[in-house]
Amino acid sequence: MFYAIRHFTCYRYSRPVWQSMMEVRMHPRSEGNQRCFVFQLSVNPRARIFGYTDSYGNLVHHFDLPPRHGQLTIISDALVNIEAQPSIPEDLEYEVWQELEDLLEKKDYWDMLMPSHFARSSPELEKLAEEIGASERRRRSPLAFLRDITSGVHRSFKYVKKSTRVNSPIEDALQSRQGVCEDFAHIMIALVRNARIPCRYVSGYLYHSKESDSVADGATHAWIEALIPKLGWVGFDPTMNAIASEKHIRTAIGRDYADVPPTMGMMKGKAETQLQVRVRVTPSQAVLPPDEEFAADEEWSQFLDETQSELAETHQQQ
Image 1: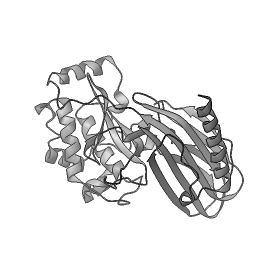
Image 2: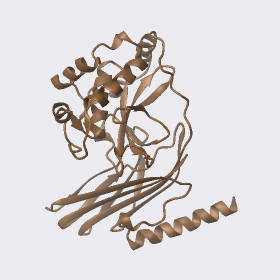
Image 3: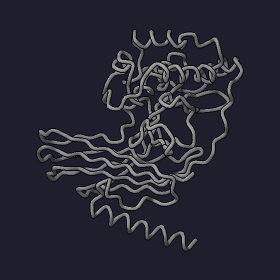
Image 4: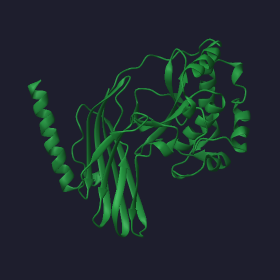
């Protein structure tokens, strides 16, 4: 399945700022059953964009804006293909626990086992573990345990948009029993790591058909991946109560959200900031055309037109 992804981010400042420095993690990963064929990034005001690969293999773009500016717009477009992945069995042998222990002795997974900034234990988390049976991991196989935790977290919390902020500790969601996909992911990561299963945070996008749930529609999405012997890293989505599928488009992985925010930066100047984010994921074999709804400026539209023409010429030559 091919997906065209447009990610629009706009920072509006109450007064001009300067010396903005920004990192962007919007480039979908190419690995496993996922391939990113096209990625375009535009910044307004214009800036020279650089890139590097971080320690987790995420593609990171960064730029500086020294002049004064009252608004910063970032628009990314990507074309991604995701092939059907092998089906995950309903269960595995109980002995996989021992295979997991042997694997942990041979290889270094400490960063995905230790508590991290947003995924850590607490009295509230221990109470939840008791409620959903996460404190008794050895009653079933690792795969059955992970399936149960996915369902347990999904059942215990209500998805409510804007009920928490990106920097909210998981205790906020644990106490109110509501949150967004980042909270669902952080809570499950903490539970899984407490069971000595390596677990990592995945940031990306989720395709929604017209009939599907509107969870995370129009925004980025988050889920987790756990390491299971014989299967490798397997994605679990507690927000949707599902194993990650061809509708999950992976952008970045890390210990938690702190490692993989779509945008992260700083600037000089005292100003109130208004942030607007929109995401569109569409089944398509071509990058999306200019879009007024996403407030694409004239420069961006021209850039897209030129790129679309280049892609069309390439297809004709093939």
